[in-house]
Image 1 (spheres, one colour):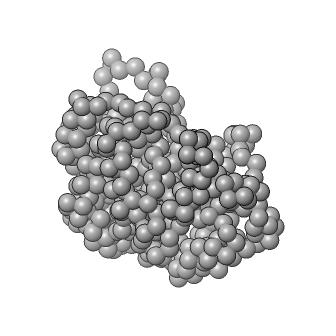
Image 2 (cartoon, one colour):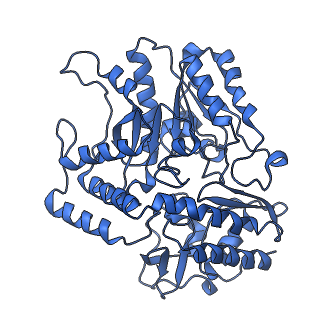
Image 3 (cartoon, helix red, strand yellow):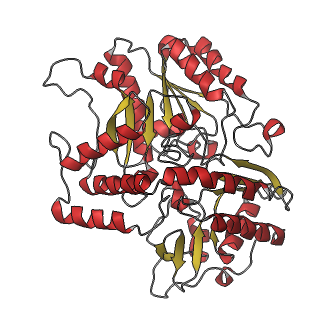
Length: 449
């Protein structure tokens, strides 16, 4: 661990009071003794108060693939604030919410063409799970109430998402709030079989057969949906084995279980296709999305739903509310304006194709770190990668934090989860910037104990 953070992080103004803000997913006491504050952002870089630039190695939190300060999104947001700053979507509509829903449906796999808007990935997950339950209820199978998640999964912080999620630390304190009818598949990472895999590991398709065991245990008539991240991002870029998701799809179809893809991280180009479903050739019944939908400028999430699910819920009296769910800010006009501008930039600059090209550069760059000190594994998929470090004896997470702090000194804003360093650079990055990111990380790894 670095001794004096003042050598790394520029001091904040003595007039800035850090006490009031309770920071999310942050060691608050540590941060307030070692503050890292950014005051601006431009392109693929954050800017600190003293002008030093940090390469945005994770596209914010997986959410700014177009880079920061995009003038097209700035202009769209400004114009929308002046024209219509808020409109409810309960019994009222506004033009951009319908336009954005249609544009997202056009980007999605065929058949998934109904879009329900939320304000975050957590809300998107909970909405997707509620849609699944409502669908089965509407078709006369109200006994289908069980949700199957997966170990090491991160599905946000709503009650449904925590319940289906599989990161123990996120669940431990809140077990009393967890939904009761939830079970979990095993995760798909086996270091002995997969270390240093490039892209999808060849081993592991059979792990999907664990779903058959859960069906036998609970009976298919009780299971509403299986929810998985096509690529598990928050737990350290866990990549699906070849054939694994195809097998899950087949089992779900055979037993009448809905398959939900949590594409909050992978949606809108991260894997070199609009959605991971298209990249992998596996089409779920529901896709939940957020993050890159507005390039991180304004919170927006949602669920993209297969037409048959929507049509099933549209039965009954025409004046009746078909789905008793929603949020005050669902389809907020400013979020929709930002979303439309984001889709325009993605299409106009072919940035999804650009992400696919840069993925090869990132793969070669990160795998060149294989023999560096402390490296235990390297994984990559699309424009995302992780370097897993061997933990220090009795100090899990300490090495990851030191890499993060030394990375800041080297001009990198990395993401660390315990001792795993994740990278998902913006689609606008140059090849040179991605190579330099890996080389800077190499230098950091050689300086840590």
